[in-house]
Image (cartoon, helix red, strand yellow):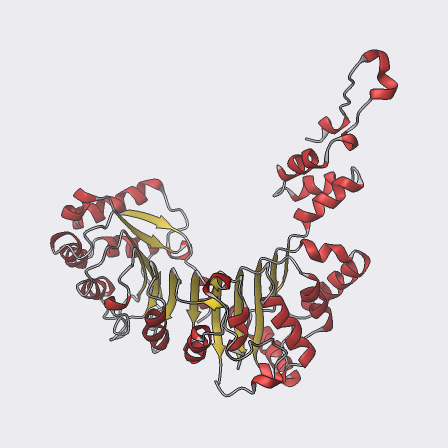
Length: 459
């Protein structure tokens, strides 16, 4: 792979000693293209970095483009020390970071190792501040001036308990011009007004974020607009996608702050809204956000099997909807008809939806006697409730523009040896259950993980 690096080029054999050209003499633009071809091959990048200083500088852009410190002690402290030492010796490395993920996901750790996570949780509660409340992490956040995607986890600690210096670093990071994607997780009383100054933010996820709404704005190191000095529309940024999971407690404050004339982040142009609507979660989000953001074209819902799962999702609030994504639970041995409930929900719509994705997720039953994966797949595809859904979609014409329908399963819910033959057989069953709809389009089966999966493991 690297053999071509030893090649040399001459303009004239007679003047070999003068016109000899090595790989180090290539223009920087050409070197960048060569190395960029191997951007995902870390072994090759490491080999390239040994060629010359010019190669080293470019390789660092790809070798140090992402940083994830998301474990617990002792691994957390070890990685902090490693990066602290590295950034002290080569400060410019931090400027190459594009993806930043800081802090352990407590609930996922609890699912994997309850005892270990319990010890960690006890230590966090005793300190009263999250693991990332660390001077070494603060230095990393300060130096990541070109970060594009940022994930911060605060381990359910209260924002009031953080030091002013730490608060300042966090606010400066999320309001940075380079940050276009932000995920705030597991934090109590986060100041929602800080988000109104994130002009360049496009994608926001609020995961278990709470805001009391009774914050003393003067105590936070945030720049505010002078009353009456409101930004013009052309100088505002606008949010494109919003994901809310167990964060209904902050929605009122979030909407109020981004709707304020002084906000430089506009919510009215929102295109995608993803809401966890299990239990009582998501009710405030579905009733408040669409009233402000009437431009939503993609709606993603994760619902439970209880009554009233769709009651807060009023079709009148989604007039421009083009894509509908619904995640439905399957609980063996319990009374529940998710497809029929979805059909009843669809009857309320008269929308120009073009794409319908139906995600299924298996949830443990109390009996503990679960059928095999392939049996569950066959039973769901052969469910007669598909006919009720077809009646609404094809016969009643609720979605007259519908051209694509996909049934999605999670990888962990399908047989370990999922064959192409089984996949074709399941699609054939779906076609038989919805013959009228199949004449207009062919429903397909796919396997992948939806965006809520990262927040639900262990729940």
